[in-house]
Length: 135
Image (cartoon, rainbow, N blue to C red; front, top):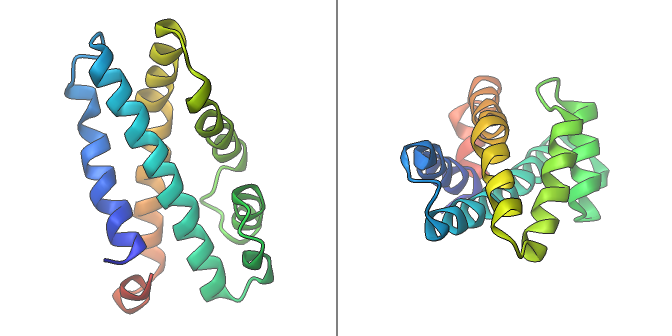
């Protein structure tokens, strides 16, 4: 399965998070885990798109470098939000209390899912199916 297909499939699941009981600790944990995976797939899709576009910066493999380069290449990337997501992704392993987890889930639901959806939409609009099949 290609990265963009995985990205889209995982996004469909994450988009259903709003329908879940976010007072349930197990659900909160699941949403955070899905966010982690979605972010990973997102920056890796961007990396593949940049490689397709001929960007040399993709060799580093650093998510921060990929995000900064993607911002320069694509007008639909909100660099500050993607970098914020990177920080939150990094912090997910250090969330030890319920309040911090609930705050992250609220950000995921009200801010980050929309950014993931926007990325998917713009990629579909900008690239033909031939390119998407290769990603």
